[in-house]
Image (cartoon, rainbow, N blue to C red; front, side):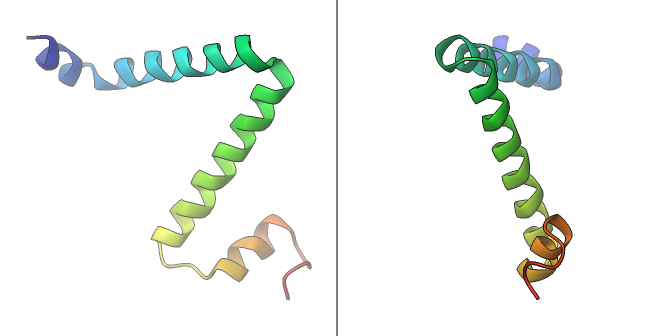
Length: 70
């Protein structure tokens, strides 16, 4: 029953878990460290998604930091 409820509302459940995780990180390490952590996670997700789409790593890095990886 609980699993069916969570499966039916999986977006809300994941959102609550993500909020809980980031809230705990904020309480433990502070606002700016949490913000840097979120930027790192987002950048890692972006690069991982591009690699899953079979893009070249140099092209990805050139989009992020133009002129550094030629």
